[in-house]
Image 1: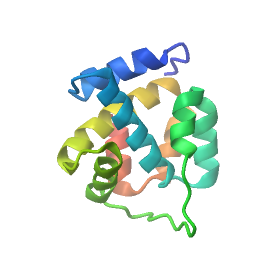
Image 2: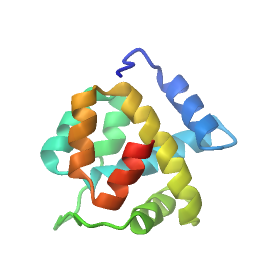
Image 3: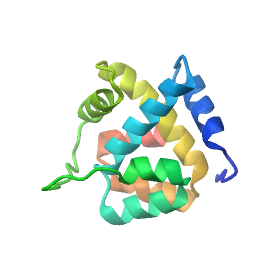
Length: 135
């Protein structure tokens, strides 16, 4: 279910509503943190495929940053994923980051086709995959 016509403002408005955020700026900051964290937890090929399917601003957030030595944790617990999202968004509550991550995941899934959705899910750790699939 692809919705390529979605504007960035509409993306943030949906994240704001579903993530129970107060402002579009909060939604933008949280979306950036989720995409950044997601980027470190996807294989390079899937991350590039997802980046090509997203609007340029969102793709930049997914692909920004690097690590000197990058070993993906293929069994990353959801709690740790949420902790990283919380740190990158300026919010220290991982429980809140889980809820907001689900809102961002849901909007990302609206922008991509079903095949890419399945490939992204398959590439995630089991706990993060469950959140992705539920979004």
